[in-house]
Image 1 (tube, rainbow, N blue to C red):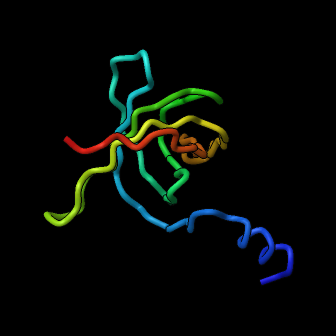
Image 2: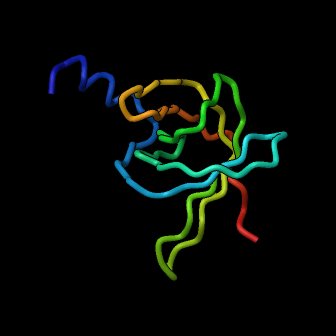
Length: 105
C-alpha cells in the first residue's frame, strides 16, 4: 500500500465492505421499484449497480434484504453522488451516500 493509499484509507470514518447482494430501490416521487446489486457497503454509503439510469442528486429508498433469520433488512434513504457508465454491460454504477437508515418496524 502506498503512502497516498494509506493516508486515504485512514481518513475513512467507516470501513467499506465488499458485498454482492441483490437490492431493490425506488426513486423518491416515482412509483416504480427497480432491482440492482450492492457491490460494496459502509456505514456512510454503498455502490449500487443497475441497468436503471439515474442522475446526480436523485434520492432513493434502498432495501437490502435480510440474508438469514438472524438479520433484518436494511432500509435506507440515499442520494446519488457519483455516476459511472459501464457501456459494454449496459449498466451503471452509482456511489450513494446514506442519508438516513429507517428503523425496523
